[in-house]
Image (tube, rainbow, N blue to C red; front, side, top):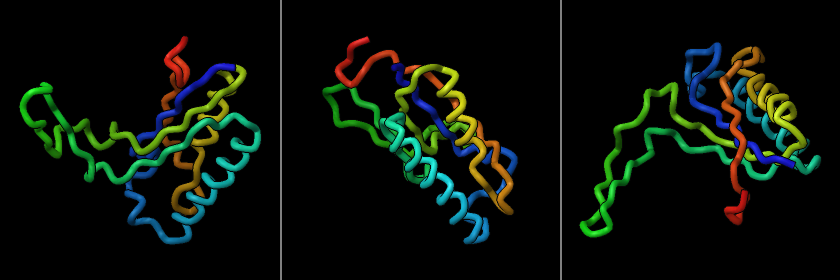
Length: 133
């Protein structure tokens, strides 16, 4: 079995409107889709970890040299379309299966139930939780 990390960004896919402008029913459908997919992939044993991240405006950058107090700032950050929204770690039989799961994540519904086509980056994990390849 091979582990893959699937990275989801705040790029809205085919929708330019941020989620906080969507109708409440559309937001609920979006999260219900993720809940069902998470349940299915947990039960299959493929989902290792899922993590949604808070609004990128709450993020901070820390720089330290190990001597002086760290410098904490609210940037610079990548453009809003490149900001990580969350990630999933899957342990699957093949890259093809990881790509199938990524396609299902990308098809999460947006306004009116239309699939968002949100980009999902798929990367193989090089080491396990013990740091071994």
